[in-house]
Structure formats: structure tokens, C-alpha cells
Image 1 (cartoon, rainbow, N blue to C red):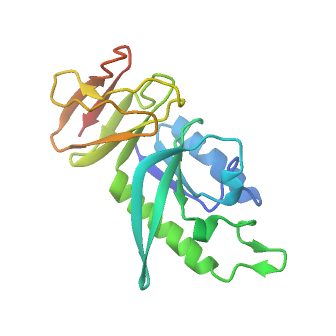
Image 2: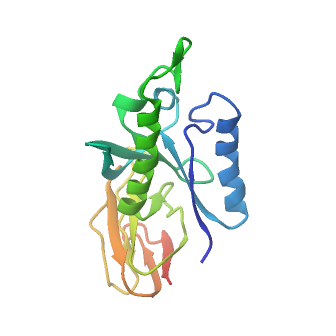
Length: 213
């Protein structure tokens, strides 16, 4: 199985940037993927990100993050227009701000809480979401997904708004999702080792495989 890497950064180009960290976070995951790693990038959903011209999708995953005596809810968004999937932790109370870390007068007073929350939120998202397969351009964007037994796999329809829905249907009929509309998702847990090819019933040229090891 290829090395699985969750690359976690407080900023990443082209989504948010104050300096060189964003350039590294935007480019290193791509280089790791070219070396054969299975990489996903996690970044806060800053106001700068929301105001960009990029298209973000919901994953259908909402998480609750324990932070000291509080339990804080957040939403997980995705961007699949690049070489690696990018996931965003959206909590407007903490990240919908004019600057990433502070105003010209000084750092935000709650930066410790903000980025402790972000770090824990990524861990919760990884536990909740398992592996993701974006669907875009009438393709399963991960054509061969390798996971361990017991893993959860979530397919997310990231097509344009006017696109037809898809299904996730095993070739041997073991499972068949309902129609997955744009912005919706379907999740399945793979408890048994083996090779599981699947397709989209309305668009049978769409084919991929899950390999459970």
C-alpha cells in the first residue's frame, strides 16, 4: 500500500497566503504525490479562501471538536480542481476574519484556541471521513484506491450544478448506492479484504476499483 500522507497547514497557496509557508504547503503535497504517496491537504477555510474565485464543495461531513471545556462544531469542505484533494475546516467564528493571524496592530488574542481547534478538527475529520473519492468531469478521480480492512470510503459528487447524478455500484452487485446528486455523498465501510471494481450505472464508462488489504 502506498504511503498515506495528511499534510496539515494553517495556510496554503492559492487558497490563503501570508508568506513562504503557503508556497511550501501548496507545492510539497503535489511533489509527494508524484513520488507515489496518497496525499490530502488540510487547511482552515479563511475569509481569504472564501472570497477567491475557486469552487468549493461540501463533503457532507460535520464534526464536533472537543476543545478544553467546549465542544465546537465545524464543517468539512473540499476542493478537487488540483493535483491533490484539499479539505477545509470551516468554522466562521474562528476563521472568517480579515487577516489570517492578526491585524496590523497585533496577533489575534485567540490564536492558540484557533489553531489548537484546527489541529484537532483535522484528526476528527480523518476519523469520520476515512478516504474520499471525488467525482468530477464524469470520472471517479481516484481510479485505484487502496485501503485497510475496516476503512470507510466516501464518494463526493463534485460535478457542476447542472450535471446528472451518479451511482457507486459494485460490478458484482454487492452494493449499489442511491443516485448521488451534485454536492451529495455516499459512504461505505469495507470490512473484507479483496478487490472491488465498481462503476456508475447511468454512466457505465465511469469505472474504478477499491483494493482492501
